[in-house]
Length: 94
Image (cartoon, rainbow, N blue to C red; front, side, top):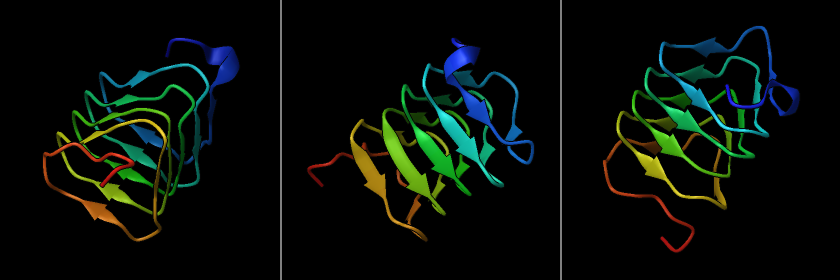
């Protein structure tokens, strides 16, 4: 965790080993962050399942599942129930 003062993590959140939490993130409810994932800065994940080695920028993710190795660029809102399993980059232009 880069900056604990700007990071909020609920007690029910599960973090696997080697997760990188950049400044300004909020992890809520039953979110699960896979090993080697990098989240933030300024990301908000609520009830999200983030797979291993996912790289997610400034995102809003509520009730979503991101499979292993997915890259989600900044300024993306992932809809509730959305599942991203492919390796291609998810961007606000897709």
